[in-house]
Image 1: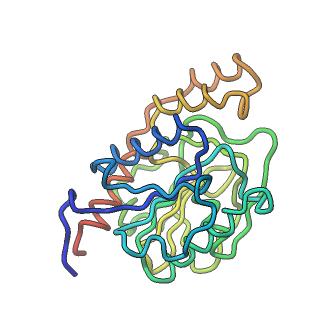
Image 2: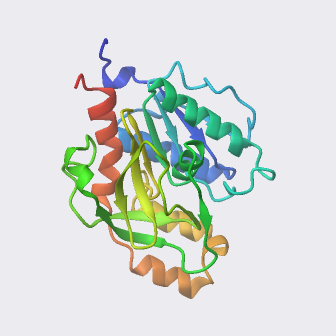
Amino acid sequence: MILKNRDQLKILLLQIRDGEQVRREEHQSFADYCGVSTTQIDILNVFDTPDFAVDAADQYDALFVGGASEANVLKPDQYPFVEQSQKLIRHCGEIGKPVFASCFGFQLAILALGGEILHRDIDFEMGTLPISLTESTADDLLYHDTPEGFHAVSVHRQYAEKLPENCQLLAYTNQCLHSFKLKGKPFWAFQFHPEVDKATLVERLTFYKAHYTDGDSHLDQVLDSAVETPESNILVRKFVDRVLLSSE
């Protein structure tokens, strides 16, 4: 295998964002935490292109899958790209294409690999939360030097309680599963948002406050308790450095 330099990488971002502001912000956030230019991350936005080939990522070095606030993985009839996205993710897993799936991407990955996603209307996770690690992280390429109880941005109504077969649990909270690796593949998924930091959380929750909060006082309460999330954010860079740019 011929190793590339960082500036030679080409990544496909499967984006599930309808609003123009959040589209740009997510693209920039992934690029910043990868340490690459936005020109190195091509976007396949499912709202623009709901029907796409399952091998759309084959010519790229990796597939990234982002979050969503305008879609629901449990409503494939309303959002036809949900099933096609699962096919793309499953195909990448089968051929060993490196995958980094965040939030909505985590939920798509769970479904794509044969698992189940549940829904919670109230008391769902929102803000920056401490994340617990399993013993499996001691030998994991991304997590082995991540501290127990690190904080990460998490805002989601859908969640998973059980992993599909052939998946290894890496992180969790009391409420749900938060990260897994597809065994034997360079494929990681995160219910939390490694690509989102505290400043971006403030922007996003303010933008989507009607969708997630009960009003300004609730929003203020969540944002006032938010903390910085460096150990979460560096996972994106670790994926690039240790998976895409390493010979190990």
